[in-house]
Amino acid sequence: MMKKILLGIVAILLIGANLIACSFDKSLNAAVPGKVELCANSSDVMGLAGYNSNVDADSIKKFNVLDVQVDVLYIPPETKTLIFKGKTYETSFLISKNLFMRNYSYDVYMYKNPETDEMMEFHVVSGTNDEIVGYRYNVSVSQLTKTASKSEDELIQIATAALSEFTNANYYKNVSIQSWTNYNVWKVEFYNTIGDIRVADSSYVELTMDGEVIAVEALPEPAILKAARYSKLDRAQFDAALETQMEQAYPDYLRDDAEMFSDIKYDGTNIQSCCITLDNNGNPIVVYYATPKLKYDILYRGDAAQVLQEKSIDVHETGVYEPPVYGVIYIE
Image (cartoon, rainbow, N blue to C red; front, side):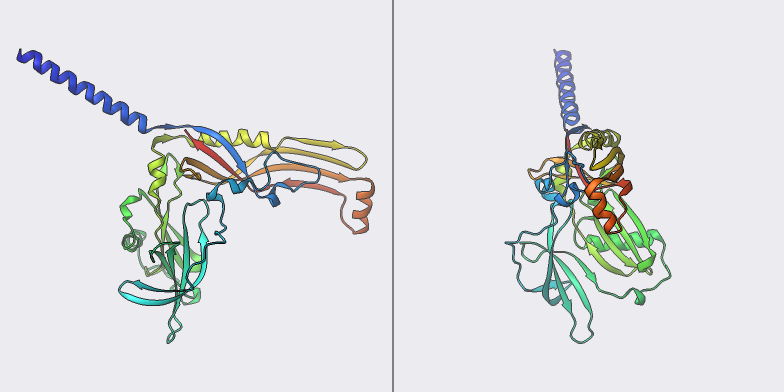
């Protein structure tokens, strides 16, 4: 009897383990590309005479994360009294920023010390009760130290401590450091990835060459990782899905008549950047910033050629046209 009970318990445990494993595999499975959309501004859709792509004008407005325009109805207070590190600052509104490829916006408030002319800006989340998510000291590049006196590990430790004053730095799994020699500044960036694509939830700290913190921007977006629960993501698959859509959107074009000879051919796409973020409904997407390469050979004829010649403009044009395009690929 005892043996049967033990066998029953073992069976239940095995079933439970299998259920947990299946549940884990289901929630953390491999990401694959779904629907692909290409977006552009109306000014970028029109570029080559006689050529029309299959990308809708102003389609960029379909996704909030591609819009950097702030809501015109949002009017922040002209002044704010902010408390930062135990000190009180009387600040004035400067500008509102809607962060590109992010579901984030904040207001910039400026402080100026009337005695020393010291200036700094505070980043306050739009529409909240004075939540500070970053700051920046306005310093002259010429006044900054040009010689590095600390190791990169030491600088990262300082940056981590500075970021931790605003958020849990352990939220980020990756950190990188870059020297901006033209500005005498180190930039330490904290970020997450899924596969080999960055998540649009990064934060950063800027330091002088000798390790003094001059700027912090703490902008984690845990909603992205929560929505994009995938254990694997093959970027090559997403790049290929983008390329397929680009080929369809930018077909070859040939015109040869009395007014114009125009030969335009699609010649691949340059990917400038990509990241994982959310659409307007909270669904995970990979957003690309890319430029299709359109090789063109255009010869104006007839009246058009005559007008151009009168203005001393060459009637024959050759080159590569690269309009900016945003690719949105849903993650499935």
